[in-house]
Length: 279
Image: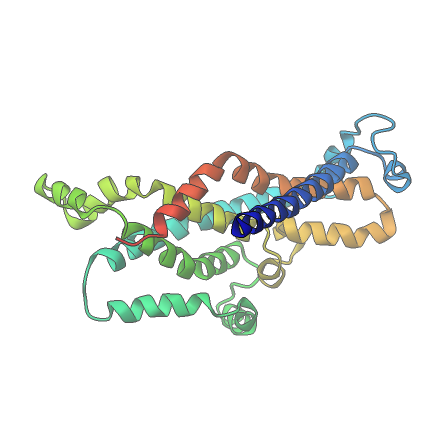
């Protein structure tokens, strides 16, 4: 009886903490969204939307503050990097999960070890190397950094996911005349869709919100990413005082990842739970 009371109290405390955090998160996000369609005066007087929605804040953010260019830059960098990451990591993870060959364990250990290397340690060596290759300040250079920094965790995640898929499907594909890579592209890769969607979302969130890599390798005005452009916008607030435009810019940066998670949360959970148990 006492254990039952303790369990109930513990569960009640957990729900209370989660409820308080949920209310705080909704309040914070809601306030920012309301501030993004209010005037600067209304923001400082805490009378949001007193004069009605100010949708021109978003127009001003895209035009005056150049957020439109930064949005297109981030979209191009991230989408190109995500495609390259999957095309490289998925076959590598499939081979590591399905075939036995000399050095397989060593290669897996190297990928796992690469996950633990802090990105800050790589800034100077990569910058020196890219400087010699004349890739600093180029679009290709930043995409290459995004791909290289994301591959270790992607391979590690997909290796565990491919290990959960039944081998009988590959054997059936080989009986029908498929080669090993044919079975991968036609059978195993479509079945790995939950894992691919999950890791793509994780990579998207990390790359979309990236600041330091873009600051080092794409800091020129015409190549800035959205996160980098937002930082420069915040700095310019000291002189312009357009806080309403700044909150509109924050929403523009935040909204893609929020919508992505909102509509694909079920696939994220399915991908994580499926890859958590090895066959």
